[in-house]
Picture 1 (cartoon, rainbow, N blue to C red):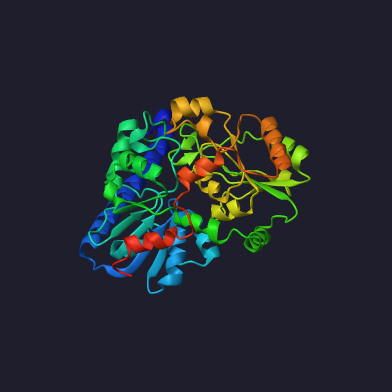
Picture 2 (picture 1 turned 90 degrees about the vertical axis):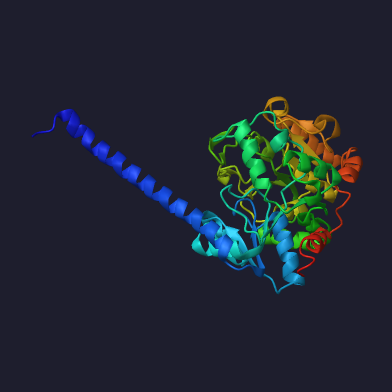
Length: 416
């Protein structure tokens, strides 16, 4: 029997759909088997009391609080076996730093994760991962909050979820945390409520990642870092580090970013004396095209540790990112490029305090205003804003270069 033209045309498509369905089914079975194996291994394999697994920003970076804790333990307690959880797309970041890593979700990763006595991470882990009873989960988080978090958010605009599901899933994950690091009393109160974490699990130590801003804030370290990163020593350095927008995305976990700074104008007005370093948020998927600005603009979005960028910069430009709470430790000037503040404040996220009144630096909305404020700072000799002293006292009061030590004493004290 001969196929009709319509049936003949539909046959390849049907076959393609069938193969796609089979592949999807096989993938689902493999994923299900892996998750079941993780649960079984966590229940039956013996704990390794000296094994710690670290992760930073979903396995994309060797950075932040986990890095500071890792490097402190390397120096003070080398008897620990320590590994980094690394996304397979970002393993080069760990190879470049020469640190031992496990490819995230590999079989080896599963065995190490299920036997580890400690997990140390700065962002949420996938909800399906069960925490073995012998594992202590140290959540370091990654910033003092300006924008509303978790339970405090009125509406969630992120893809792949809704407000109720987002909050439920967040709290299901946070219920696994044994300790949560807080950089200051302000954060402790917010974290406890927004993350639904028992206040007794919150440890106020300051942020380990900020130890570097006290211990290496000297001309020798800064000059060495500039040389390593290829930044000219004879120019002033501006760091631009914006956050992401919940409602600007390609897909779940992949966010868009539109660069609103006019680099042509900035180079024309500032290029003879300045360079600008751009550092996008880890959730942003954009690849900046800066070839036309060689020697003036540099993309350091994939650079390991943003603290190095803080140290070498003379001034920070940001928006609502928590980076400005950390940068305040250096007592250097900051500028807030907030072109969409009404939407971000009133609809998208909301703030915990009156940002316009308390920000430790001017708020501007255009490139012209950015340039004007940079030149004004130069005339003043790059001194902090008048709000900076009160801001520092409230948010940086615990920082002294020894936060990593305090974390180790509180969390690992019995085992060290």
